[in-house]
Picture 1: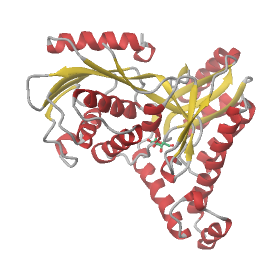
Picture 2: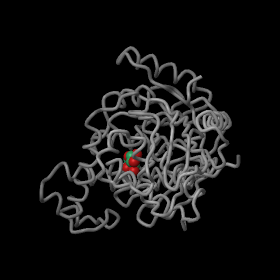
Picture 3: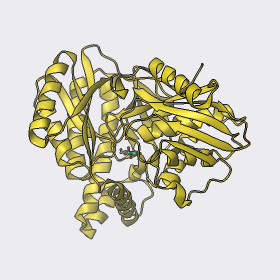
Length: 397
Ligand code: GLA
């Protein structure tokens, strides 16, 4: 059985056993945080836009208990495909973002970053991490780890964080300063605030959010992991952020939400096609996401599918964050009967696509996608059907 097929109960049992075997006593505190798939609203969380993500049932469990030390954390991960060592020991009071010793073990950087930015007395503890979120698939395994870690250390300490907005911000700071990824706040917000059977419309200007019912027996959501991660991704994400800031600066604005036709004419005069394209994507994707939320509310799934297709075209041509493999996965999905719409999801340059389709067509669509992908790229596309699931929580052991 692959990790992604394990149920939460199985993850918990695996964690309890691993904790007992490693540390010789019982875990007392456990937290769970899910990965996510974004239905629409891509690359606009850091641009004051909207997104419409949903949580997956797959997530990360952090489980453990205090140890006898004042401030030593001893953590072991059982996640698949990690880089570096799977066990780390460190002093929770001696963390610094710039410490080069922490830089080459990515999973540990997220954990350390969250403890650092939690910024409160964390006692010495032992913990295990178990997860069934596929790594590097663009479904936020890192946010799941950050959020689960935060809930865990919050439960171990005496400090309570005031709100999920604050929790999400702590996790984002951890990611920026310890993992070096200049991400937005979407992944952490959905992991914390998701409700089963709903997608979450998030306004990133105000951080207000609305639960949008999203459940239909006749429709399914399919994630296809391209299993590619193009090297240029890290730098390119930051570059997109810089280009968007530059476009705003040229227009003399602080937010894309305030763009009026006269502002756009400034960009046209500057004749910078890249900035024009990025801006166009942001403005249109904001509108598409609001329209998509409306379509879901009205049960207009055909419209939802059309908007997803448009979103992909824009990400491919205007924002330039797709790649050949993702385009091929989207094209083959869109050509299958029963598919309402397909698009890349997440940061791009690899990772996954998300497809809205009729439940009765799932098996045929998956087999068409896998066949094309194997023939064209000699790679496997991992496909899984997902349901909008509940958000992060403490688990009673
Ligand atoms: C990554 C980031 C998010 C968001 C998406 C693109 O997942 O972590 O904050 O910017 O890319 O929508």
